[in-house]
Length: 212
Image (cartoon, rainbow, N blue to C red; front, side, top):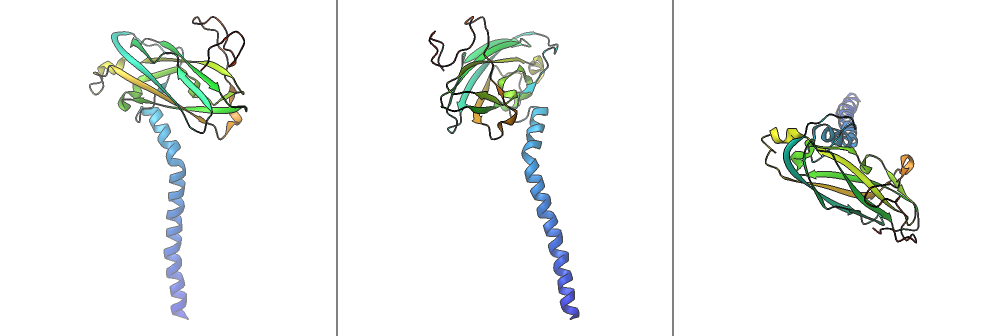
């Protein structure tokens, strides 16, 4: 009888710590991705860009860098998505606004969100975005086509960092996915811009608006 009681105690002493370890591992796994993403956003590691306020003062340095734009759409999302310019050349510290086109080719309203990264990965901390469609989840109604801005600059500190000072070309990539939690989404707004002088139009409008 005593041996049976001792065995049960030994089992409890072994099983309970193991269950605690498994529970702790589960918690760590659940929070690992958001914590890593937060770390990347703060440090720029992993090709994550930085977010800057519109009033952020930045010096301009007479050193050019070319920023290329790459776009993809997840196969499960029936959208079209492309940059209006595949690349821009800008001085370090210079603010630049570029535009992207997105269209919902489905017969239903869809909310999408854009994931993004920068290559080379080590320059992510120096690429700052002031405005971007990737900051929020976006809603497109059936057949809608919209023009979306990204305002960005490359921090002049890049030229002073020996690890990346020789980088002359940066690639900024976006991939759109369908959102799994669309409650906080907003409608993508049409924009008046100097390039076309008209508001964005739905795909197939009679005035021959741009298609994506």
